[in-house]
Amino acid sequence: MKVKALQGDTVDLLCQRYYGTTQGVTEIVLAANKSLADQIFMEAGQVVELPEVNASATKETVQLWS
Image 1: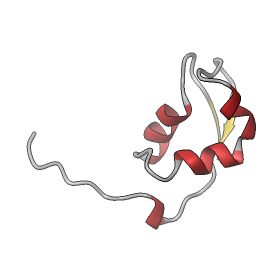
Image 2 (image 1 turned 45 degrees about the vertical axis):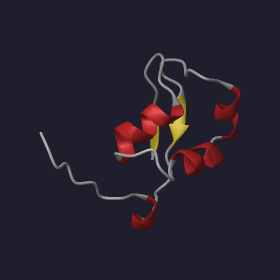
Image 3 (image 1 turned 90 degrees about the vertical axis):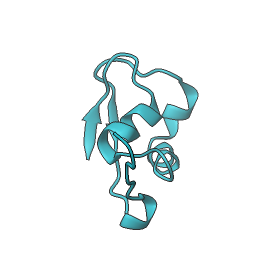
Image 4 (image 1 turned 120 degrees about the vertical axis):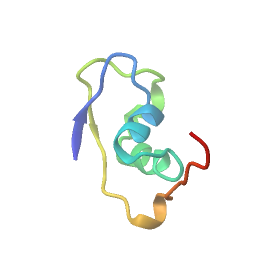
């Protein structure tokens, strides 16, 4: 899936927003978008490829207290 970054987005922020986690998926997104490793913040409207990840790359979390 291709998404457009918001001003000031980072790779890990995009991963958290779309995958619900950064663990294990940030590396996958960086591998699919090699140029992202050369910058810290993305520009508004920058297109980023978010590959599909299998269920083992993401973990379900349980919130014990609210």
